[in-house]
Structure formats: structure tokens, C-alpha cells
Length: 323
Ligand SMILES: Cc1cc2nc3c(=O)[nH]c(=O)nc-3n(C[C@H](O)[C@H](O)[C@H](O)COP(=O)(O)O)c2cc1C
Image (cartoon, rainbow, N blue to C red; front, top):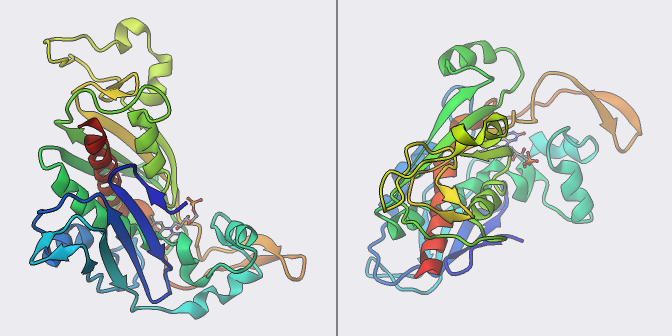
């Protein structure tokens, strides 16, 4: 559904072109100093407007409307609300008859029997990740000793991001990318052996982010081509420090005290202005669809802070479960 977490639990709500989007956080510890200004640096990192991102400009001003009193969290559900201001819904009218290839227009309509809000991608929009980033700010405060850093490794298969962006501008196409994420100083012992393994829980929340299509921990798929003698992470002290980290900081679903390391694959945005032959569901005829409007040509550019937030939310919940 629209909730994640066992003790630190978040529920996201809203639609891209509705009145507002937001998040309700349950399980926030009481007595944490929290102000709207605390959210601004991470929210700014997710903002659009730079080359390769949508020109839609939203103020993204968070409003803390419950769970806060005299500047401190109360322990009651914390609600963070963002109003939607820069809306141009006419750009999306066409997608009712001609669902965008690669987007959720068709699946949303099918699942919700045509009652879904299609404007701006509705509840399937990348805008929903604003709520996740806000939740991440709170989560990061709950686990201050853990440092989480995500960065772009490549876009369109190239580490030279500026070069790709230059050639992308006039192409009418979109590109994907790979993001790496490292979280340091996670205590050994968080996570469960099977269904709630640390890999499962991180993957669960990361795959909730629109446009994520792959994840690997440590050496991931490359470990399938290693021998045990190369892949085994040898211990160098009794706290469990290892000489290498092919495991990505997890053994048996449980953190081993070394860095949590994973990478994710972000697909190219499906909304491209290049013509695509696809079905008009109303007429039954294949047509050339040329998507106009405002879109991210490279979603990966906005992804690092979103991945950090997802990781922080998951780790904050695991921390509470481990107490
Ligand atoms: C920050 C962010 C921005 C996005 N911007 C766009 C966009 O401008 N155009 C688009 O077609 N998809 C965009 N997406 C991706 C769609 O939301 C996503 O492809 C769609 O919901 C279908 O989900 P799936 O790709 O995970 O299957 C964005 C995703 C994120 C996380």
C-alpha cells in the first residue's frame, strides 16, 4: 500500500497536480528539535530546473501541520504537507487515450478502474519523492551517528555527466543512470535472517521510488563471477571489520558493522518528445506519440538525495526494531 516501516512508519499521500502532497510519520521519538528550515537543504538537492531536469518550478515549502509543539516533536504522528503550485494539467489529457509507453498511465487506469487522477502522473509522479525526502530529513535526525551519502556514478553509460547533458539537450530523448549509496557506522546486528533481511528492506523502499529498475549490494552481480577466495571478506578485528567489502556490509540479512554499500539503476524517463509508435486505445490504431510538456530528461540527476532518504527511513526503522 502507501505505507512503509514497522515502528517508524511513513504513509505518503497526494497527487502531482492535486492540492498537495505529503507524508505522515508515525513512531517519531518525542523531544527532537525540528523546524521547517531543517528540510530546506535536502529539498533543494531534489529540486528541478537544472539542465536535464523538468522546468516545473515548485516552492517545495514544507508545512509541519501536526506532531510538533514549541519546536519539538511530540511523539504523535508528524504530518508534513507541500502544496502544489506550478500545475499544467492540459499536457496530460492525451495520455487517457494513448498511454505513455514505459509510464504507469495504463497500469494505473487498469488497477484503479479509471478513477485514478492522471494529471501529471497523479500518485505515480516523481513528485511523490518530495514526501520521501522530507521523511528522510526526520529519519537522518533519528540516526545521527550514521552518515549516508549517495552519488551519481554515470548517466547514459558515461561518467562525464556534463558531456552527456550537452548532447541530450536537443535530442528529444531521455537517459538513465547509476547511483551508488554508502552508509557508514551502522552497528552490527540490525536486520533479520529471512524476509526482513537488510537487503530485503532496503530493496523494498528503494523499489518504491518511481523509475528504479535494479539494485545490487556490495559486489552484487559481479560476485557471481568471482571465486570464494576472492569474494570472501576476511576479518581483521574482533568487531567484525573486514579487509574487503564484497558483501556490502550485510551477511545473513544482518548488518556486519562494515559500510552498507549498494548501487541502483535508474531508467530513462518515459516521457520523450521523439516520436514513438504506440497504440491509441480509443481508436485501436497505432499512432506516432510525441510527448510535449515538462519532463526530466535524466531522472538520475535528482536521485541521490532520494536514495539517501529511502536509506535513512529504512535504517531508522531498523534501529528502533533493534532496541
Ligand atoms: C524525481 C523523479 C522525477 C521523474 N520525472 C519524470 C518525468 O519528468 N517524466 C516521466 O515520464 N517520468 C518521470 N519519472 C518517472 C515516473 O514517475 C515513473 O517512470 C512512472 O511512475 C512509472 O514507474 P516505473 O518507471 O517505476 O515503472 C520521475 C521519477 C522520479 C523519481
